[in-house]
Length: 362
Ligand code: IPM
Ligand code: MG
Image (cartoon, helix red, strand yellow):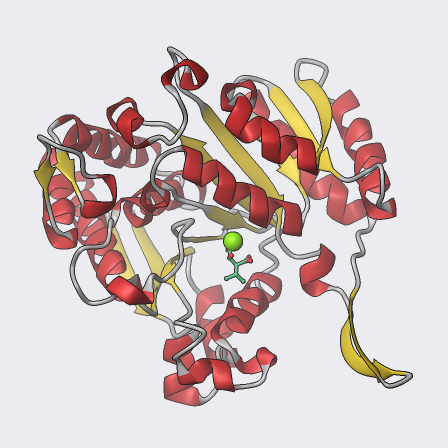
């Protein structure tokens, strides 16, 4: 089959890791007889350098012609990069938020899974990890809440004041809740809805609407958890979680925490989906400008994001399985980039890791 894939190389380590993912996609297309046509898209700092803006109409229009988009990472060092001298709405991150909104990518899926081979990299004690390790997915609402509320910085009675407003309507909550329950049905059938319902009205609405959706999925165990408790439970007993369903800001914070307990944020993929099968796929980590261009970054999160793209947007299940199996294989074989290296393993560069995964596919 033939597909059109948008590629956003982005900033920092983005270009190197996307190149490795493209290498893996090319190997898959060859092995399974598909044609992947690529279209390069500008976003973030790279787009600012080329056009003055972190996202242009051209990128949005071109992305809409693609079956899916694979992204590296965007952004630079806020202390040294000239991008951060621009007003906030012209900085790299604003481009990422704007493309999520423009493409209606309301469902952000962030799996956090502990590879048995990487148990040594997990900062938690063995007895906390347990025999079977842990395997959860955070389903984060991505186009509402504080990120997209009204904001204003002003002087009130001579005092500098900034306001960010947090608003959700029932439809925004219901559609993401449905996604979470559908995903739970294909997993261990448990949804933990995370909020701050002891304080926030928006959280109380989240509880009400998600409980209504839960009633449509009697097979799924449904529970509510306060976000501060969830932050604690993630390090106290991560294996209790299957699907964590939460709003935009809480999901941002909890997903970094969940990724850390897996040992390396360099291993974790993510998908941002709209109502149809279209999605933007990106590693859960950032652009790591400090190691950009050094060929030492871990490309696995991006390669696993490409696998998610094949699974969710292109409906190529066995191809996605093959990539995931190849990643598993290279870990078993001892290949490690610096971030996941431990004694006795084979230390490799970004491109060597990509080559090893391509090798394991064949
Ligand atoms: C993420 C990132 C973004 C977010 C930033 C870069 C705006 O942290 O994807 O988690 O907060 O959503
Ligand atoms: Mg984040």
